[in-house]
Image (cartoon, rainbow, N blue to C red; front, side, top):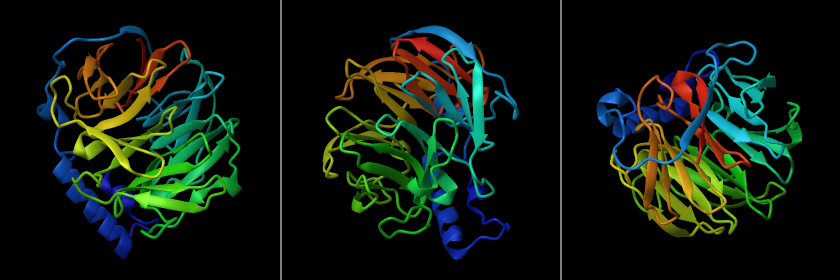
Length: 332
């Protein structure tokens, strides 16, 4: 994602777009996203590893089942894998990487989606249409459910959004949406789309975020947030009360550098992909590191700017190796 994606359709920047762009550039500079990441993180991560590389697949391209800088991933109940790439295409594969079908989001002149979530209750795919300030819902055949779209207006009022990055539903059907830009917050909506609550603002304090990038709802309806540019994980109860926070910037085991996605296995352990450290790290729920996998590079078993994770029913971790244009599967 780059700052130029905040431009309007005709190439001119609105006053709100200019503010958002300045906020992005300021945040990106503060987070180090405008500098080469390799020099900041080194190569192979130190410490104990976990898992075994099982399969690598994917080809670079913009047609058919090829991918171009895919940035989000999800798995449905039938174990189909969904990716969204930088051409704004939703690509659907089986778990071995065989391409099944795909479709494109309605428009992408302003920018591309950066979040995907499979919602088992509705059997639909939630797409964070980041630069159009909305969450789209699709049937799994690619049919857009227009009536289910959440948002679409750029702003800071309840129900308006900045750059949305992810959306998830809890066991009661409530929808949580995270966003960055002017807001850096989480908003909560009822199953009928009624605004219920919001929390967060831009900053480094316990009640603030700097680019909340991805969300996870656990079996207790706690909301886990990858607070990416603060290099930490935050956990909230359904009312938005902060119940846990851990993580610090760095490349040592237990530290993080731009945590971009998080999944939880059946045992309750967490896997976090670190965009800046080019690795995946396994944690207890209390933040204790249980091992790392990956490291910067182009070879199999190495990663380059990974964005996303998905865990299948066989307890295999699928890692979206974004700038290598591939998926790597790890038995954990």
